[in-house]
Length: 409
Image 1 (tube, rainbow, N blue to C red):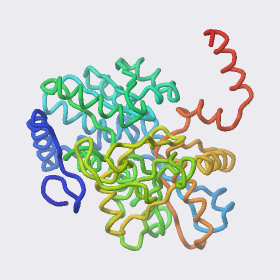
Image 2 (image 1 turned 90 degrees about the horizontal axis):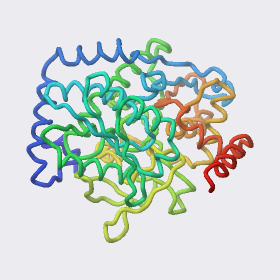
Image 3 (image 1 turned 180 degrees about the vertical axis):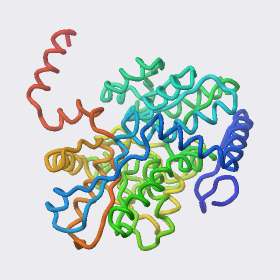
Image 4 (image 1 turned 135 degrees about the vertical axis):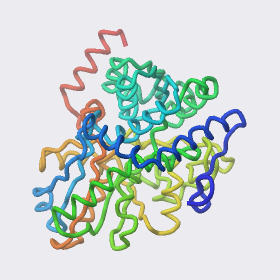
C-alpha cells in the first residue's frame, strides 16, 4: 500500500473539504487501534462471545463425489451472528465509534445483511441507527428490512437513480455531510475513500486467518484454489488476506454475470471488458460507466453484488495478476444453489452462490489430492422471495396473486 490508501494507481480519498477532518479523525482512531495489541484481542473476544467465531470449515463430501475432482471445503460465514460475514466489519467499526465518542451510526445496504449487522451492532452498543437501502432492494429483501426495523433502525428507501446499492451509498454520504459531528458512517464493503478499504479488510481478515489455520489442520495442506464472490469486495478480501503470501494458492473472485457479459445486464467490473478506471464515491477504481463517466445501471439476481464499482485493493490485485476474476450468470447461480441444497443441505446466499458456481465448474479439472476452498459468505434465507420466484414455485405465485388482489393491484 502506498501513501494515503493507494494500491498502485487505485484507491485514495477524493473528498469534499467539509469531510476531510472527519476522515482524518477516523484514520487516526484506526491507526491507534491497530497499534494497540489489546484492541485486536478485545475485538476477537467480542466476535467469539457475541458472534460465535471461529466459524467452522465444512467438508462437502457429497459435492466432492459429484464432481470427482478436488476435495471441496466451505468456510461457513453463514453461521456468523446475523447470518453473514458482515458482522465482522460492523462490530469492529462499533468499537471505533465508541472510541471516537459518537452516538449515531448510518449505513448503506444492498442485500440487507450489512444493514441487519449494523442495526444489531447499534442495539448492542446503544447507538441510534439509520439504514439507507435502494427501493428495489427494499422490495426484494423484505425479510432483512423487517429485522432492521425490529432492531430499532430507521430504514430509508432510496428512490434515486437505479434505486440499488450505488444510490444507497450516495444517500448515506449526504447524511454524513450533514451530521458528521455526531455520526459515523459504517461503510459495509472494502470500497470508498481511504481508510475504508484498508479498515474493512482489516476486520474481515479474521476470515482468512481462521480459514488458513483450519484448512491446514483438516487436510495438512494449503488449498489449490480459493473462491469468493465479489460485490464491493469485503468477504473476498477477508478470505484472500489469509493466503495472499502463499503464491501457490490461486485466488478467484467471482462477480455477477447477470444475464451474461455479452449483455448490458450484469455487474462484472473485473471479469469482463465493460468497465473503465474512474473516480466516484470518493475513490479511484474500475467502474461500469459510459464514455462520459456516468455510472451505468447494473443487474444481478443477488442484491449484494449489484454494484457499479469494486474495491481498489481488488483492482490492484487484478492488474498485478494475484487474483483471477470470473463471472457467474444468474442461471448458473440458481443452479449452484439448487445443487448445494440437494447435495449438502446447505443454503448459501445468492451472493455466495456465485463463488459456488465457479468452483463447481472447475473442481473436476483438479485431482483428489487437491483441495479447494469456497467462502459461504452468507445464508440464503434472506433470498427466499427471489429464489421462490426463480424456481417458479406455484405456491409463491399464488401468494403474490392473493396479495395483489388484497391490495387492489
